[in-house]
Each structure stands twice: as structure tokens, then as C-alpha cells.
Image (cartoon, rainbow, N blue to C red; front, side):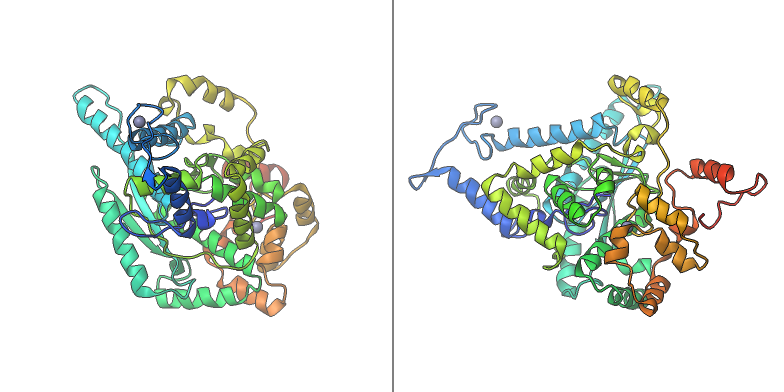
Length: 472
Ligand SMILES: [Zn+2]
Ligand SMILES: [Zn+2]
């Protein structure tokens, strides 16, 4: 799953420094954001005087960005967001969506626009509630994953930032939205002190800095899944934008995860219990940063990306690439989009016909009628679909011990970067791993559990045995 910028992203590489934030109030951006703002500000100043630029759309004499006035820029972005959501059937009226919020510009924009769409449906509902069947209004919740146990961070600063987030969420009404602040160590134990100790011990068993970084990312994704399923949400909205996805594409290629790459660059990722959607996939970070600045949306960078490992190198590399040509991140994502997606990236499985806009209905029905998606076996740590050679290895390995079965299901990248090689260290790692990971192997690790059952019954078990079994 691909991630939103910074904090509570979930899956697939953060937006790096592009989506970081915090300058002066009220809307604040990070170092790179500052540079973007300066470039834009300089462009509109000539001979020491701010030149008056006309908006290319409405003719208003106050163009502020990309030859557009704030109102036109705003409606351009909002419409783009709406098209992304509706043409991919990301949100239906009966949905309850959880927005993953990190505090950065990308997730701030995702939250803002999701709220505005909800507000609009609420108004339509209010206007039509006397009619027989008014369309219901989808629900929205917000989740912030508190990762302070992972970093040695300043507690009071984080508490302040969380209060700030609480304030932001409380202003987005009607309808009112619930904020879920989920400490990441809660995956390890309900007792947070014990959870933190277990998390720290587990991290100590991972030597590779990239492995540690990626592991945090998977913990975040699992935490979001946990919040969503415990609180009745059926979709997770991530603020992953083009820059974050481009970083993920390059770093996955370097890590040898090319096979599974198409899974992470689609609008919909349904391989998890709660499907994840990426409405900002086609938005570049500079537009989002600029929008937050101009629209005075408060953003804050709470957790900082570690400055070592492959992810950091790739993110710095892309930042430099963009200095010459800002369109390059888009080119990278466009190239990866040409790879064939997996069955779980198609929206047909997750929506009912009456929730699909009429112009899309036949497309969905055709998709449904086409062959059903093949079953994928997923790595229990990162969720990556295993490639043929991994599956052959899996078949050839005859593991008896539970932890060996687990490791045999891990993708090559996780085995190399995350799973400890030394036996004691590995045993320690496995014993500390949250159940939400180990359970994936015990449950059979497949995306479609009905298909799994059919496959298992057909090939592995006798007719009267209904158990899914502890892996083949
Ligand atoms: Zn305008
Ligand atoms: Zn993996």
C-alpha cells in the first residue's frame, strides 16, 4: 500500500521532504516548501515591485500561482480531487472513510477536500430528505498514528502538534468528525509502556537502517488498518501524492520489489482487510504545499524522516532531479502506471452497482464479468505479492516450525532487509512481532479468503476438512 506523506501514511514510501512542513503561521511549509514559495514569490516580483498578473481563467487581476487566482486554483484542485474520487468509485454514499492524517500538506488537502465533498452531500441530503430515498451521506473519521515511540522525539512538541490536529479536525464540520490518535506501540501491547519496550527490542533486532525505516512504514499501515476495522470504517484515504509515489517507485526498484510495484501505484489497493484509496495520486507536492499556504491551511511536520538508508537517498535524489525539471516525478509515476495492476487494484470488488455513477456502471459490470482476479500470495510483513520464483521456493521448502514457515512466506526484500539472519536474533524478532503480522501466515495469507478456501479444498485438503490450515 502506498503511503501518505510523513506520519500516518500507511504503505509505500512517504512523500519525503516534499510533503514536510512548518514555516511561519498560519500556513507553514518545510525547507523545500520554503524554496517553492520563494520561487513563486520571486516570479511575481519584477524590478522590486510585485507585478500584477491576470488570472488566466477568470481574468481577475490577482494571479498568485500557475497563472491562476486563489479561487480558480482552489476550484481546479478541488475538481481534480473530485474527479479522482468519483471516476474511480473511491467513496460511495454508504461508505465510512478514515482519512490518514500526518499533519503534512498532502494529508491536510486530502482531509479538507474529503470534508468538502461530505459537506456537499450533507447539503444535498438536507435538501432532499423529504423525498422517498435520499442518498445517504458517507461518514468521515480521521486517524493520526503517534510514532513517538519509534523516534526519540520531544514529547511536549508532539503533544502540542496533536492538540493542533485536534483543533483542525474540530473545525471541519458539519458533520463533526472523530479523531483517533493511535500510538504505534499499541500494536505490541495494550499497556503502552510494555508496548514501547517490545517495539524497541524488536527494532534492535533489525540491523539495516532501510529495513528499520520500511518496518516502521508497515507498522503504520497495520495501525491504520487496526483503527479502521475497530471503528467500523470500510475505506482508508491516504494522502500519497505523486512525489511520494515516485520515491516509492525508485526505492522499490532498488530494493528488488519491482514485481509488486504495480500494486502500490494504483488508485485502489484492496489487498488489506480495509481497502486503501489514493485520491491524490496525480497531485504534485508543490501544488499541495502552495495550496495549504495560500488557503491558510495549517500544516506541521511532526516526525522527521531518518537521514540514512535507501529511502532517504532516493528522496534526496528526486529533490535534485526536480530542481532541473519539476515534471520529472510525474514522468516516473506515468512510466510505472504502464505496468499491469493486480486484481486487488480493481474497484469492481468493493462497490455495489447502485453506488456507481451511471456513466461508470457498464464499465464496472464489464469488469465484473471478466475473468476473476488470480489469487495472490502476500508477504506477511510488507504485503507485497510474491513472484513466481518466490512461490517455487516456498513450495520447495518443507518447514515444520511456525517461525520458519513465516519466514518462508516473506518476500526477498523483507528477508534481506528486515528479517534477522542470526538465529537467536530471529527468534527474538519473531516472538516480538505483533500478531497482526504473524496471523497473516496462520490465516493463509491470501487476498480473497473465499478463493483461498476453494483452492485449499481443491488441492490440499480432503473434502471433509474445512480448515484453511496453517499454510501449505
Ligand atoms: Zn481566477
Ligand atoms: Zn515483504
